[in-house]
Image 1 (spheres, rainbow, N blue to C red):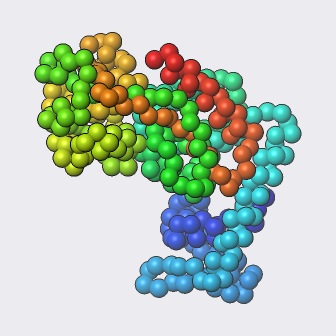
Image 2 (image 1 turned 180 degrees about the vertical axis):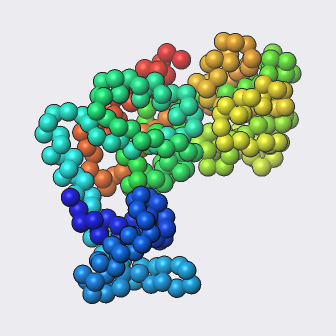
Length: 302
């Protein structure tokens, strides 16, 4: 329902790029430029400064951007509330999840939720916890599921369940016969680690600091962005890894990996994030409630 010119302007202002806005809106760049020009003619002022191939908002552009955020949010809220009068949970759900949750936990949750509410269309973003957190804060995601607490004040965090991080190694590794592994023993081994920005990496680094080991002193021989990739390298015997126990259930059953608790144990919380400033629709509320309950149940059965 919102003015199309305002929607296009908002996208350009967020991206500070006509090209990126055109890609996001599935429009041609000339069409995006035309819509912005129409809005500038309506206000009889320039909304963007164009210099050396870069664009910035003018003072008038900043003013219009502030109102555009409010108008578009109210328009979305109106569409949602009118749609909810039908009594159905339906519509698009913009969901983001960190790697561990997306690969090993969320598929079952989403499948069961979709079975209950077939009119829901889920669009999924998979990235590390830091990226998901930022996109929730930017209002480009309705819900984020991550492995670390939010650092941003404009995000509502609801703690879901406990998740234990364990040391994994190949069955033939020298640590495989241990009952547990200390931080000092990890210090002596080559480590296959998640990348910076990962919730798993952040929690592991904090754990080592709290237990007298400087993370930079760890012998990290490889950084990988996927739990599956880390498991594959660890299985080959090139080093040990630190991962969620939930990610290695299949490998433990098959005997291709060994999981050892850290001493002291490392327990973190999975969290569900929603934007504080955005109206929470019936769909978002239904999904958050379902995901919290189902993930807690799954954690209890692990």
